[in-house]
Image (cartoon, rainbow, N blue to C red; front, side, top):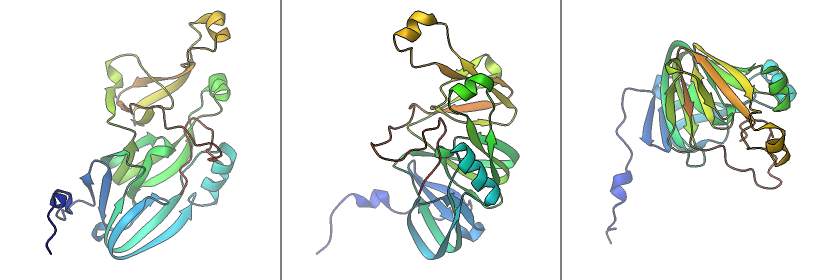
Amino acid sequence: MPIHSELAQYGEIPAGEQQFQLQNKKLLRVSLAHGPVEAATGSMVAYQGAVTFENKGSGGMGKLLKKVTTGEGVNMMHVDGQGEVFFANEAHDIQVLYLENDQISVNGDNVLAFSSSIEWDIKSLGGGMAGAMAGGLFNVTLSGSGYVAITTDGPPVMLDVAGGNTFGDPQAVVMWSSGVQMNLKTDTTGGIKSMARGGSGETFQMDFQGQGFILVQPSEGRPTPAGGGGSGGLLGALSG
């Protein structure tokens, strides 16, 4: 008997010329006809064709040592072969960018996938005493030319840093472009009385200056379930 439904609206989108395409705002479609990609371990939800997945872990001994030392980083898998692969992460929104000999700094939790032509590393963001008080601050830098897909917990806002003083919550700031400088700021405007009452919850803020933009999600991150083994850092590691 025929099946009557409205499921046709969710049909696979036609293949295009781009390596990265959004099937919808929460599902990324990648064509391997344009070359292999690196993706967050465990982010594959479906694929068609002859595809291989190789766990790259933290991306080599150097990045592994940084991850062990800092508690930050990404676990990646190398995806190669022939066909198309679909990636997602907890039904978060997906944003696709194309870098042309450029660089961005991204919260490790928000890295979904990128072309294998993109170089990546774990970088300390400094912060001095404020950074130490906040438990350390590290991000993943992605540089070169190719596609990048990042996730946001809801529709983000892109703020032009050159437009004036721009500040963000460390757990809500997803990424920023090259040309932007970040300093970690400790907000003590509430004084001792405010701290004695538990503080405002906004003690540490990112202060951005320069030329470029930052991307901020409408969320300070989803809580880690009890016993979930989260990294505990401000910009946590991706786990498969």
